[in-house]
Amino acid sequence: MLLSYLRLFMALLLATTLIACASDNDNNDVNDNTPDTEQPDDTDDDQVVTPSGLTLKLMGRHATGQFDESAAEVTAFHAGTQRAFVVNALAGAVDVLDMSDPAAPEKIDTIDATGIEENSVVNSVAVHGDLIAVAVEAPVKTDNGYVAIHRADTLERISFVEVGALPDMVTFTPDGQYILTANEGEPSDDYSVDPEGSISIVGISDLDDIQVRTADFHAFNDRKEQLLADGVRIFGPNASVAQDLEPEYIAVSADSQLAFVSLQENNALARVDIESATVTDILPLGYKQHWGDDDFFGAGRGLDVSDEDGEINISNEWAGLYGMYHPDAIAAYDVGGQTYIVTANEGDARAWGEDNQAYWDGDTAQGFVEEIRVKHLVHSSGFERRVGDDMPAHLAAMAKGALLNPETFAYCGATAGDPGDCREDEMLGRLNVTWTKGYRQDDEGNPVMFTEAGVEDPAGDWLMYDNLYSFGARSFSIFNAEGERVWDSGDRFEQFLASDSCMAGSERTIPCADYFNSGHDEEQAFDSRSDAKGPEPEGVTLGQIGEKVFAFVNLERMGGIMVYDITDPTDARFVDYYNSRDNWEDNPEDNLKAAGDLGPEASTFIAAEDSPTGEPLLIVGNEVSGTTSAYRIELTFEE
Image (cartoon, rainbow, N blue to C red; front, side):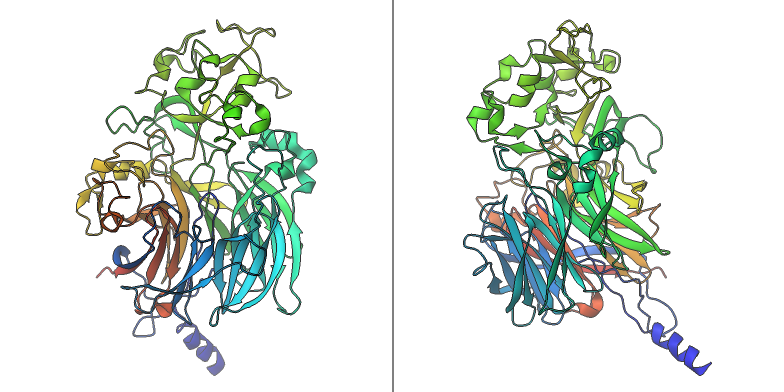
């Protein structure tokens, strides 16, 4: 009996810990998934200290002075040395920052890829215990990359091993036995080389005998038709399933048994059994319907689709329009023994060879671009008018033009042979969509052809789009381990940014609505991103404080951090929004210091017991301003 009471007393002394996962940009991701459901005690040792809410407040920042050069992206933190590790893509290395005074972070050292392979660069960093893992991209990105392991105290490199092509994100399993990398396997710009995507599982239980295994997608090569039918996007030119799937980000279950991997462009998650290094499932994420008044997890289905209408217009009246979730960063946490995955639904288009004029002139061997504005996709004059400008070569080779289904899109004036007002700027015209999905197909997946008058005809050379698919869902979602969505923020992000309640700036004095859906590298840019993924949620980090789990979601374009209480995965609640951009009127490149923080990419939650101040913190890497910011997490308690 005495032993039981002793165990109970010791359990009540355990402290708040970290569940961390951070963001990625198009080429760089982080961090360490270290779920811990232990709870802190309060001063009387009887009850858990759980806040009713929190607010973020800027403490200080480190500035590289580099604008729009990706000089501060991926973040990680080591409690023992009170150091932050920040991927500086401009330098191709990791900046080491002294965070002992978060009000004045100071760069003290660098970790680079010297001695691994000449001209290789760092993509990602993660910390667990007293080890640092660094993902290293080869000089030729389609070649296999590396993972380097360093000591956190001395920064000495212990070893490095070869992994798959383009390791874009690195993380540790919570038990510290493995390092995992998401090997994205992006193609070359002309798509002539397309390496397979994979997940490397690096066993580090014995640092003198590091073992590397690969979880690949070979078993799915003969399941392409079923995957397509299930909603997985597989569309790269001449690509096998294994080549087409591109791992972006990894989250690991609390028991270190399962890894979940975002396949961003494929609009899916992969589930990996870590012990056997096997991809067991590919889970399609579905598509977000942007019309209808039905309840969508307590929110609406709306979005603002135009950057040229001069107003905020968040509408759910876009029949035929779907959003592709396309998550970038993901994170995992456990509730009641069940694993849930949190996704930042950024959206990302494949765009290879876009700087090669030969591609736009019609040479399909020079690249592959899937993005196009609706007004250029559907036009009564067909595709020829845009060839040499912005007409994707593969689309122009497929047909002479495209039409909108006159029944679905009747609300904006579409008729059998004419898109009507649907392509006007204040309607759907400015919205960026994929041309690869939504056109009518036969049972074999071949396009059903029409005449330019909109009459179905096997001899026709026009496409008929029954639906349109835009990039990203402008939200974050929560899925269970089977890939079933249990919650989504709907249109809450845009609705809040448009509201009188939203105030930006480090002192919260600037109405967000004045700069709604602004770009991160522009001034006076009201509404400039409404046609292209809106506020663009890209990163997500989780932090547990007491009995509550909070999600910190980075909005890359508009900037700022959305904070939600996700303790109940089926009923997430808004907590705070903080945007430390202070100057929206002047060109940020001209006065970068005054601008504040631009383009938050990755963030790292620091639990109170690990923090230099004794209170929880959030470290944020901002790729456009090149700043690494430290935010105080100020807790509130109900009386």
